[in-house]
Image 1 (tube, rainbow, N blue to C red):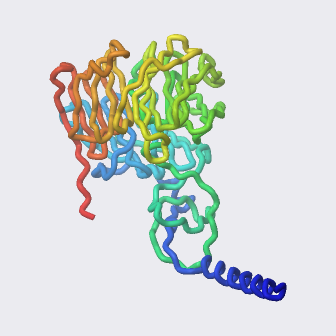
Image 2 (image 1 turned 135 degrees about the vertical axis):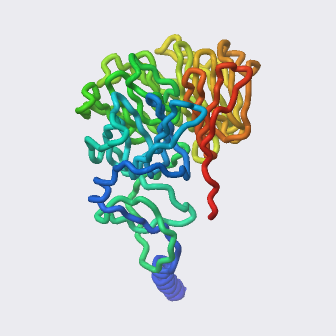
Image 3 (image 1 turned 120 degrees about the vertical axis):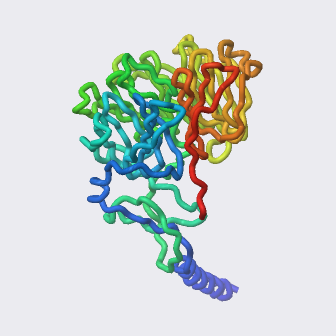
Length: 422
């Protein structure tokens, strides 16, 4: 009997040895990395002629211009001096770009691992003036998640795309890199206020925030970098801050930063802008959540589904009258909300496939009964209210509405994404 068991064990080990080896070396499909060399990457920022948008991303308003990110590619620049006829002027190629912020004609943009500073004082002569290398965690571009990843060789450069291919090489698990989920891993104030007109306005899905002379950038899901940009010709990295897990957005209001995270909202005092101090937090179920704030309330959209968490989506109204003890006043059911914006008593909510929703928020406890309008012809992602002009970005394109008469909102213009023939 012992001989039989011993023989069976030897047979099993032998089968496992050859079978496991075959499993590792069999032919399979992978996402094979496509690289840009480090030297090309460091010199890739450049101004080009205008081009059609293939995919919309973050939006930013500065002066008479609207800047629209095309994820991982760069920034489209539109002259919006006439909102009824925005004119595409040029494109800034920035590999790996997702977020931007602008102050005093200096544009700050992420480029994979680097932060680049671009002088836009002369729109006909845009140029990179400074680069902070390796200040963001290296995150890989989106891919076909059906397949495993091929081995990544950092010596070959930056991974900028993937090629689906068959391989029979021995498979090795690549080193861990965070995957950047564009629609859920990034979310700041739709109407940021400044002491002058030299700071632009960002959409609520941004990870960059300028407050007075300081730039805050999310470098990862649990940390920010802090830059002194008081001298427009000399940005300086002046600190960092480690936060809780799952941070997605940053918003500035009244000397406080409001961080939207997957499990709540964190509030920090920035009376000393380079040394933020923790004040309090508001906790909620795990979700994806941009946030905007006025003097008394924080408005947070909680989006479920995907990897965001729970099955329910909602709008939370949080009382921040006592900034040290924020508490929820009421919640409203939503479909799949993304960005939001506020202007006086108006609240704009991008509820995804349910459309753009507009509310009178003068009484936060009665928002549901003060629903003013819904536009269901687009699936909005983010908004910037600009004092009677609403800039909306959606997968379908860029839209502008005149809301000077809230009971008769008019579409002023649209720049539609061409339908792919593929």
